[in-house]
Image 1 (cartoon, rainbow, N blue to C red):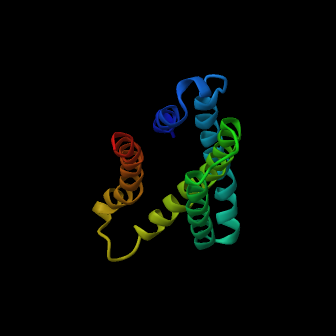
Image 2 (cartoon, helix red, strand yellow):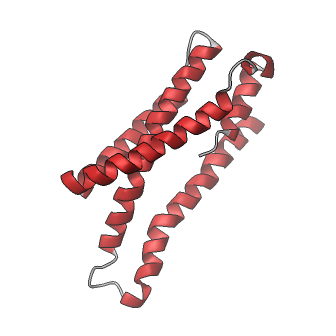
Image 3 (tube, one colour):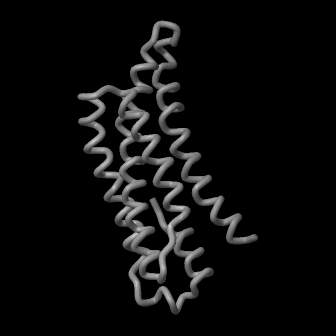
Length: 150
């Protein structure tokens, strides 16, 4: 979870001088990663106790809510904006991390159904879990780049 596009956009909007006093680049990356780890650990346990559907629906709701709040982050000062952005990135990271244990287990369970050929089971499992993650990284980098170039 890199914050390179975020750093580029913030520098363009506020200027490098206004952001020089804050260690925002490392903070945003670190908090996003910490949230991802917290989400993985907590939702692995919660989805075992409360069900896969609960885990997936809650994880998706967290990602949607805090992605929107990340995009709407604002503050009366640059420091306030960065604090709000950091908090939302941590909470968004929890949702992202929650999707790893819930989604992988749900995909593994679905790939064992009778109509799926056992020889191609691992192919479909890898396609279902890894393909969306990889495309997410591509889109997450391209969208800020396109907006930056506009």
